[in-house]
Image 1 (cartoon, helix red, strand yellow):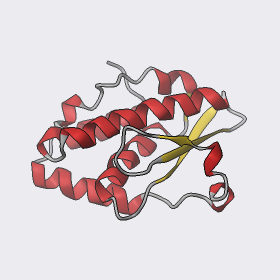
Image 2: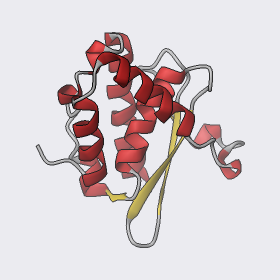
Image 3: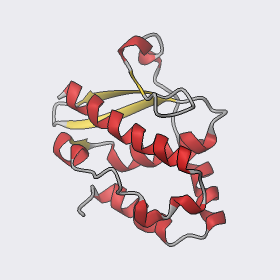
Image 4: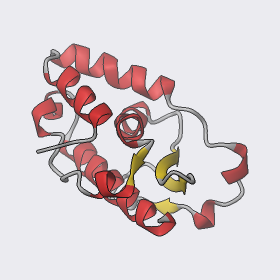
Length: 141
């Protein structure tokens, strides 16, 4: 399986961590996730919802002239696990072209053994976020 470079580095890093390190890393990713840019705050109707998540998650993608795609997500700060998982995806996929984004398999996360740190319900949401990021990327391309 070939993943975008940044996403592969994240997968490799997390794969070697203990359960406690994975939890700490998810919290760090959650804390580093930027707020939704001001220009999108009044445009939630244009954002892609992720109904697979129990937490309200909304995604919007932008494409720059070079063809790179950047994702912006709106996730409550009171949901650090979901923010952390989503931040893994934005850190791994932002700046990639559409072809690389849509080629990421839904099970790419398996080598990270995230099931050691988060519930299956959260992992289902994580898979849903990836699917909706792909949809948002296709919409802007």
